[in-house]
Length: 240
Length: 240
Image (cartoon, rainbow over all chains, first blue to last red):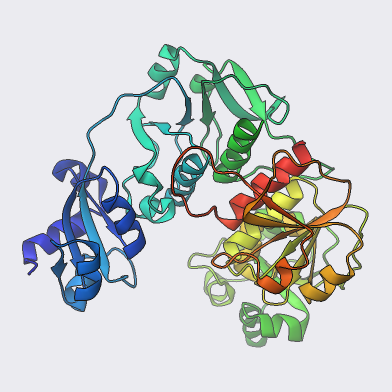
């Protein structure tokens, strides 16, 4: 049984304000729910329109009607599985490995894809500026495909964080040292910038080394998407 | 002046069937229109809701009302500039450089991003299987951001094409030779597979070398998005 109040609560979790107020976030779909159930995240509610599906996921699932699911879902067509988890405690950062820093990445799809790329390349930590899109935004979770369970994401004053960094800080720019030829140390921070404006000046001043993905041939592509640039940069880092 | 018939024609170009029948395709937005005007593509019509904007783009622009633009546009909110170009003639392939081959890439956003990545890394040719999404689909053009003008894309029976290839054929897989450690020759074909199923068996049999982007650390990310995987692979190829 799901109450009207619960439906209202679940629906409100589409908004960051209520996620933070209630300390909860919502995911939809069997696969991502399964991945989060197997992770450190703590389940609050699990709703399913199909009893078999619900049972296969968790003994405490709640069966709901199509209509109720529709009311709770943030998707145009619900997948039939919706789970609410507790927002995790803030965890400390570990400087013994690489950290990806994001300066005002705004697009949920980009952040989700970046989380997935970090997971692939074992970059276990992301430090995001406070104006980066919230990683518990349902669209981010949709794009990150469960990788959110394996990458630690913290929101900080990025300037303060970089000022205090004891490891080298790299910024990615249109002009800079060739990312494919750089000898990377064992630890450091790589900063990726905003979709439209790149890395802001204040943050850029704290980047000890400017890296760039060289363009090949003669042409005029203006830029690469930030998720694509992250993939190429982390590939160069881990593959070198 | 724009006639009712023209409006109908422009609107129909959202569909592949009519694009091929009429030999035309449509783009929206100032920036992509500008890039295509400076390219080998031949303009058929240019519509703008703002006279100054229209004039700045092309002397033969046609001024239209907001309402007419809305009827022609495929976007939920039109940018005020819409251009119709002639579909280009089929051009021959040049085997003296790398070719990217796509086996049933279905998502327009992915294809658009892949075209942009090819442009960046100077991979001037894409051979797409006949079931790959049409590169003149408006959503592809939106994501490719004018790179369509610099990358030659042909649709072929991919099996036949690979059978006849005189340069080495590489496939990208979950398991294979480490893409970061491979010594690439000066020419070849790299095959990227479908979003859900990867490279089909018949095509895979024609790949002389299987490449893979290694996963780092212990985790369970299932796969990378095909555009992200293309970016990393071409980065490894050009950056090596």
